[in-house]
Image (cartoon, rainbow, N blue to C red; front, side, top):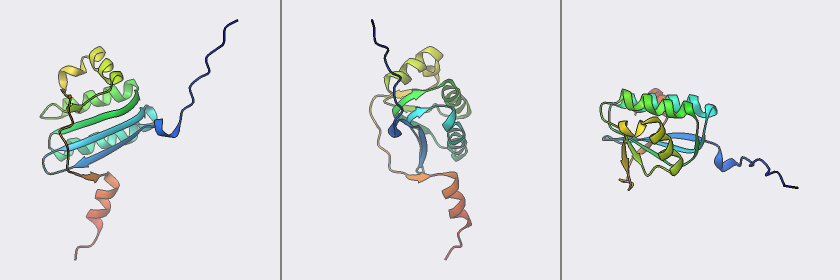
Length: 136
C-alpha cells in the first residue's frame, strides 16, 4: 500500500507581498512569496504607481515562490504601458518558465546580476500622507 503525500502547509514566509521603491532615475517593483489573487489589489496599485512615475522599471522577483495567471497578465500589462522594457532581475526558475510559456520574455530585459538600487520605499499611502503633511 502506498502513502499519500500530504498537501504542503503554507507558511507565513510564503505569503505574497509587493513593494515599490523609487529613485529619481528608476522604479523597483519588489515581488516576493506566493503571488495569487489575494495580492492582486496591491500588485495593481504598485504597477499603476510604477507607470505614473515615468521612469524605467526594474522588477525584483528573486524571492517569488509561486505566480498565478493574474500576476503574469499584470506584468504583461506593465510591460505594455512602459516606454522602456522593464528589467527583470535574476528571475527564479518558476518565473523563467512562465516567461517562456507566455512569450513575456520578449517584452522584458533579463538581468543575471542585480544592478543595485539606492531608492526609498514608495507606497500610495505613504505618498498621500507626505503630500498632506504641512511643510515647515
